[in-house]
Image 1 (cartoon, rainbow, N blue to C red):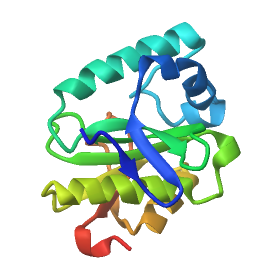
Image 2 (cartoon, helix red, strand yellow; image 1 turned 180 degrees about the vertical axis):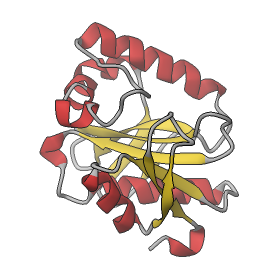
Image 3 (cartoon, rainbow, N blue to C red; image 1 turned 180 degrees about the horizontal axis):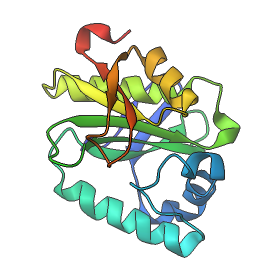
Length: 176
């Protein structure tokens, strides 16, 4: 995993276990958490968030590049506002999924698409020729973000997570 990815307004860096207190409001927000299940269980308190972060840190150490999970901070003040991922999609891990999660207070500022483009550039720089994002049919915000990143809707599937999902694909030439 990359140590750090930087954009004009954001720093994407590896998660640390001591991020638990700042991460909890992001991953426990009902309008964020509802879209993460079943890939992520509910996170009711700081101790549970700490356990999640311990798992992420350990798993990231074993993932082949370019896969990983990043904490998303505002470059101007280091405030933690969300997370971004680039992970093998289940069940076989042959497709690479890009994802993003932001605290609702930071929605509508373009941070999710900026983080997504940074993760995509990282994947393409490591030799990948396409990456995917998946979203539930009712998650219109995620679908709109995928399109703003430059992703193309390629259909609907139940292949991943045993859910009906909208699938978006990004290739290097599509990245704005």
